[in-house]
Every structure is written in structure tokens, then in C-alpha cells.
Image (cartoon, rainbow, N blue to C red; front, side, top):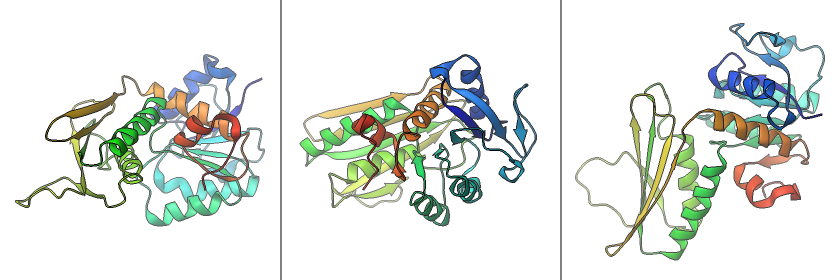
Length: 259
């Protein structure tokens, strides 16, 4: 028997993708129920309008595909019930990030701006290139559909954070404008919102002599649902702590929390 899941935001596009994958037997995952204040849910799903309505915990992990503002209430419930959580939303405020860190002191919390394995690999390779070419400049270009609210994307910021880990003097310049000359230590991030683009992230690392361009393109949002289910499988075997995609990819089954 696979992992039993509760999906917060079951009525949204990504929540429905998780439900679809469960119905198709993806990794033998089982959908135990969903939470959505609108009352929308795929047919046959046990629906709650809030976590306060849940009277019996018959699931192993919670996947959150709702909205970043739901994090404090959801994490409070998860801590009280000692249930691991996979947070698959972006755009969290400082207060919400504090709630995430606090919750991870009691339960396993998987928090990633992007649930794609390919993005995790892109970050690893880009960091290796940036470290090997210390004199190169770095630019990040991210593209998404016109409905996306936050910019830069959480994934672009995650990539930039990874790059900064090997460039201690680097700082971010989001949406360059004006007449100032580019600083050698800045990492430029540029956001494009157009049409129905699922998600594209490009890291450009170059010197005056050569340029390396690394790009990841999401063809379907289903990949994020697949990643979330895989993350849930990973985190239920972990002790309390804060985890992300890099942690899962690089540490495998060692189940060590991020220090």
C-alpha cells in the first residue's frame, strides 16, 4: 500500500493533478481527502472546507497546493497532529517563513519553490559552473503565464540563492533598469509574463570569451504534482526538520535534515 495523502487546495489545478495521479496509481499513492474553502473537489473525494473540519486523521502526509497565506493555519494543524507537510506554494511573507521554520522544529516540513527534479539538477549544475568560472557574470531569466502573481518566481530566487552560495559577494538585481553600469557582483533576474507558459528558467553564465546557457522548460504542470508526491514519500521517512528538493536529490534515503 502506498502513502495516504491529504491535499490542501484540492479544488485547484495542481490539487486536481495530484488527485488524478493518485487515481491512476502513481507510486501507489492514495488520496484520503482534500481541503478547499470553495467546496470544489474532484468527484469521489472526501472534502473539508478547512482543516478544522477534519475529525479523523487517516492520512500520512499533507500536500499543500493552495496559497502561501494558508501556511500558518495548516502548519499549526500539522504540528498538533504530528503529520509531515509538503509545501508546494511560493510567495511566502517573512511571517509565514517564520511559521515554516518554527513548525520544522516539531515535524518534517518539505518546502520547495519548485517540485521539479530537473530544476534541482539545473541548480546543481549551474552552481558548479559558477564556481568553476569565478570571473563570469550571471543572469537568470524566468518565464511564466500571465496569471502568475509573484515575480521573480520562487524558483528563480531559489536558483539565485544556490548561486550565491558559491559567490559570497553576489547580490540580486531584479528587473534591471536605469543607466547605471552593471556591477560585477550582481546576479540579474528578469521576469517575463506571457500567454500560457508553464514555466521556463534559464541561467546564463558568461565571460567575454564564452557563455554557458542552462535551461529548464516545464511542458506540463503534472511534473509538479509528481514531484510533490515523491517528496511526500521521502519526508514521511524523515525526522523533524526542514527539507527541500536539493536535500532529497543529494541525500537520497539518508534522511538528514537541512542544517
